[in-house]
Length: 273
Image 1 (tube, rainbow, N blue to C red):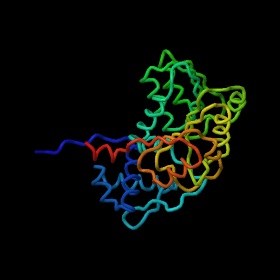
Image 2: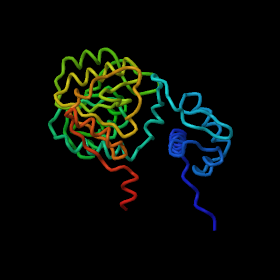
Image 3: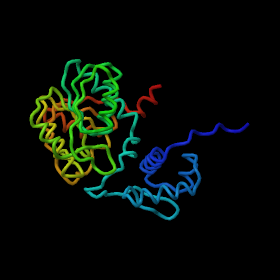
Image 4: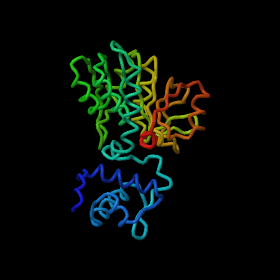
């Protein structure tokens, strides 16, 4: 009896799965990746070349290993980032959305985890005044009839749906929102950082424009600092993360007065099933 055919993955899903497998194993051969994902070895080779060119990994004889130290300005591809830790991002986004109330004004930062929160807000039928610098998040939010959506202007960053600069930053200086849902590239020690000056500046403007700042960051964001500092952890009121994060990192965040909500990861949920 023949085995059922596996669903075909789009390139971003395939490459994210490949990176996740290599990350978990430390290294992987082309044959291992082909068998695990259900694709040809020639497709694996092409994907590894693509990922190596963009700085995700290093090729080894017959396989690949994850880059041990990414450059501080390393820009992950938006399509691949959206596929990483999807279960955890959705759980974090849902938990954050559950704390919002209809009638609130909310700033939605450009982030794949904040995007998950935006989708959860729509599912909960929340009536919000929503402000965002992300075209994708704006498109999700306008799908709800009870949302008043303001999309900040600016320059769209290459390879993403993120808008930065003016007039968006100027408009944020005129706002006083109830909540800002913020993402980050890295949490390192007591600081948050981003890979570009423009992205960091937009996040700072959102933080300054909100009475309550909520950081949405899965466990992978506890890592080496990126190029540009955004703010101190003390500028954040609450963190939503998942239970793969090092307990000592979570404790450090709590010790500076930040409230932390930890959601179950896929591994924990699977083990409990």
